[in-house]
Structure formats: C-alpha cells, structure tokens
Amino acid sequence: MSEIQLVGFDADDTLWRSQDYFDDAQIEFERIVGAYVDLRDARVQERLYEVEKRNIALFGYGVKGMVLSMIEAAVDITGQRIAANDVHRIVELGKSLLRHPVELLPGIREAVESIAADFDVVLITKGDLFHQEAKVRQCGFADLFRRIEIVSEKDNATYARLLEEFELPAQRFVMVGNSLRSDIAPVLELGGWGIHVPYHTTWSHENEATVADDAPRLRRIASAHELPAAVSDLAAQAG
Amino acid sequence: MSEIQLVGFDADDTLWRSQDYFDDAQIEFERIVGAYVDLRDARVQERLYEVEKRNIALFGYGVKGMVLSMIEAAVDITGQRIAANDVHRIVELGKSLLRHPVELLPGIREAVESIAADFDVVLITKGDLFHQEAKVRQCGFADLFRRIEIVSEKDNATYARLLEEFELPAQRFVMVGNSLRSDIAPVLELGGWGIHVPYHTTWSHENEATVADDAPRLRRIASAHELPAAVSDLAAQAG
Image (cartoon, rainbow over all chains, first blue to last red; front, top):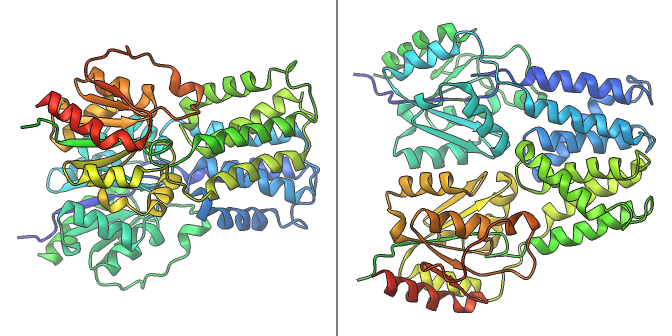
C-alpha cells in the first residue's frame, strides 16, 4: 500500500496562468517609463526588481504591492518627472490584473480530478487573500479540494504548520507546483515529496532556490497531462 | 451551566489601535492634495471615500488598497496636476502605516487573559493577510487564541463558515468588536451574541449597519476593562 495520502497543489502558474499577466504588466510599465528615459541606460527592469524585493518584507506578495513598487520605481527612474496621468496608468495596470478572468492551464482540471479520486487534495497558495479568494471562486473546481490555504509565505515553517494542522507526517505529502523556491525545496527539506511542473515564465524571485536534479523524492514533468502518472509513480516508490 | 463556549475577538480597534493611524494618514493626504486645490471646494474627503468604496470590490481591505485609492483620488482631485514627489509621499504614508508598531488598547491584554481562563477564545480579523499576520506576531499574546482567522470580509457567510469549522452553533458564540457592521450585526443575525466596544473613531464604511439598542443578545460597553464582566453576564443569560 502507498504511504502517500495528501497531494498539495500550488495555484498561480500551476492551476491557472498568472506570471504571463505580470510579464505583460512589466512590458506596459517599461512603455510608460520609456517615454522619460532610455530603457537600457536606466536599467529599468533591474531597478524595478530591486524595489520589489526591498518592499516584499513590508508589502508581501500580490498585485497591489507590485503596483505600489512600480509607482515608487517610476518616480525614482524618471527622476521625479513622471506625470500624474502616467501614474494613473500604472494604477489601472494593476486593476486590469486584478480583474483578469481565470484561465486554467491545459489539462489541469482533468489531472486534479483524476488525482482527487485516489488521494486527498488541498490547495496551497500564497499572495493577496482577496485576489486569491476571487480566483479560487472563479476556477470552477474549488470543491475538489479538502482545504484551501492562502498563506503569506511558502517556506519550511508554513509547510510544517500546515502538515501539523493536517495531522500528517511530511513523508505522506506530495506538493505539486511550478516554483522550486515556494513549492518544492521546503517540502523536500521537511522529508516530503515534490512534483515540479515548470511554467514557461517565472518571476526571478521564485527561481532563487536550487534543488538537485537527482533529488530522490522529486519528479519533474513538462505538463499537467503527466501529473496523475507522476503522483502514482511517487506513491509506488513511497509505498 | 452556561451555554457560551467560544468568544471571538476582532483585532483592529478592539485589541490594538488602527483607525487613528488611518485618520492621521487622511490628514496628511489632505495636506498633500491641499497644495493643489481648496480642500472644501474640492470635497476631498468625500471624493477619497467614493474612490475607496468603489475599489473595495477589487482591492479588499487594508493599507495597500487604501494607498492605491489615495493615489487614484489624488490624480483626479488635482486635475492630473499632482507632482511625482507628492505621489511618492503618498506611497511613503502607506509604508509608515505598515511599519507602525502595534499599540495595545488599555486593559485589553488582561481582559483577554481573564476571558481565556473560562472560555475558548479566537481572533477573527479582516484585511490584508500579510499586515494582519505581522500585527498578530507583534501583539505578544497571540498564543492565547485557539485559532487566528484572517478573512477577506466579515459577513454572515464568513461567520457561518467559521462556526461550521469550529463545529459550534451560533448560540454558543460571542463576538467582541468595535464595528457594528463587521463584528456585531452578522453574528446577531445568525443567532449568536455580541459585545460592542465602540472605538473613538470609526471608518465610515464600518458604521453602515444598524443594530437596535435593545437587541436582546447584545451588550455595549465603554472599554476593555468591562469585558470580562460583560462576557460573564451574557453567559449567565445564555445559560
């Protein structure tokens, strides 16, 4: 018999598209700021990322914090020359991100349904409570998940707390996600299992983790279609 | 024997100061915008509140959403004349709110300790997950609460869901808080009990509820010092 009992799913860029919209917002941000400065000379991307990283400890993750960081960066990058209507365009950028309808990744609904037939499944996502709840409501299959956990950070301490609440040893838990930093590394460190499904674009912050390619309790797959087989495979190995 | 088993506490302006800082931020906002327009002619307060109310459905509650609404309102109120450095001052306003140390209200720690000796206590607060978690960590008595619930809205549906998770009928639950709209009205409607501790200043939004002064399962008290007696009193009535 398999020891695996619970499968956790990340949400952004695992169940539905997210980083694509952030990337689009970044391009629009560069277009706005590009009216004031030469984009390369001003190191716009790097300076925005520096501001975002500095502000994470205060703002946490999510669209609203990103927009505030964009405004702060735009004031700085333009040497305080950015016009009010361009500031307003940045606020509107954020609003359109928050309003964007949920677009599920191909095959993910079927994969979660298939896995939920054999295991308990939970959703573990970080970011803005209000926005994540809205996306969960819209996704159409939230009722498959035994629990929806919206957390402010996905690190060892968070996963340890959740596993304690679930009354489950890490050895019986698999986490599925696109981020090595947030979904895979902490769970492997706690003694659990990981299935890494890279997304075609990833925020720099989420790549700041290294996990050995041959880590024994890790699988890497290319798309949601391979998920049910990967979970079965891990469960057989764990059993 | 008393039927009351669980006492829920609101956090902002019930355990610790909050609205005072928002009020200060509003005064600073008026100072910034007042350099461009006549405050009374421009109906600055009303227009800011209009923008905030319109944006709640998208931003939810909390400092970051408030700052974005302030920036949007400032652009509008100044006829797109607000300068970049003044926009930056508004962002900094938000940061100083997020950095503000937690200031407990007089007597609240002792009141919660006293009540926790006789009843289970939980914390139920709405707003920004990241900021609320930071304040809970700082308050110094988070370990008294059996659960910390940070929710996006405090309405009938939220309280009904929480009571279901607690496996408790509303008749055995008392909610303590400063907001009629968020802490008292929904709990009374579900059949629970309420202790209203008004704060000296309240955001207009939270006053948008009416509860009869003689509602049978409601107590109103003036400060935290009266809390343990009010809970005992309700428990005797419920028993």
